[in-house]
Image 1 (cartoon, helix red, strand yellow):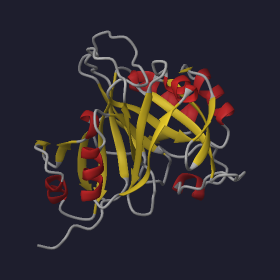
Image 2 (image 1 turned 90 degrees about the vertical axis):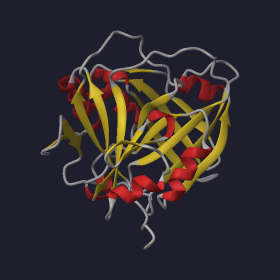
Image 3 (image 1 turned 120 degrees about the horizontal axis):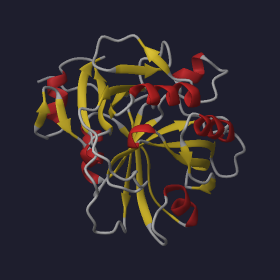
Image 4 (image 1 turned 180 degrees about the horizontal axis):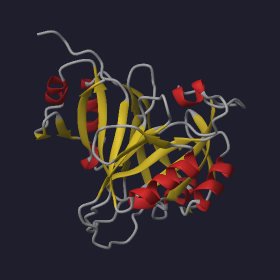
Length: 282
């Protein structure tokens, strides 16, 4: 049987929304993301002309009240955006009704990041960062962003990555390898800066992984394994991030089978941290 070619980047992330109009307003005013004509369910939002890194909002069937999520709560919890001007993006996010944690500057093995995490609609947290690449470098890190490459005036990228808080990294790593994705980052993180930006319990640490399709285009997948998450029950959430759609050249069913997980629906399997992964011809 012919080997599978590598899967493409995440075409879209789907979420259940208690108020799609409010969420769409935040996407437009904070990140310059607009509604895209699409025959699928709900509303699709992205950067016009860019086929990947889009966000689909589907009205929630029910929405019992629960407390807003923590940055380290298990599950598909955050969406990430890169910005050339974190302070300006923060102002727009807050003006659109979002709430922000502190803006923190920290280093990891590849970059120095300036970042904040903001609470937006539908229990979605947004990690917004500006990254300087390489030890001793003063130049911004350059990861592909078709949105900014075709529109150099843009401050923000399209959806940069989907972030899941997981109990273990290896199942997600193995799934990425099966799809032909490559590891971009894989290292531990700790310190007061990480505690501040994610609201971690004092003294906690995490293991971080980022993977991407060949070509490193958005949207990517990130996983965080929090080492000291208290043993407690977290509320079931009826809104928020649910599914990521990955584009493939052919035979979506074979790509779904390659992950070795039971099907949730046709071409849909369980991914890391409860994230559903759907394969679709791209």
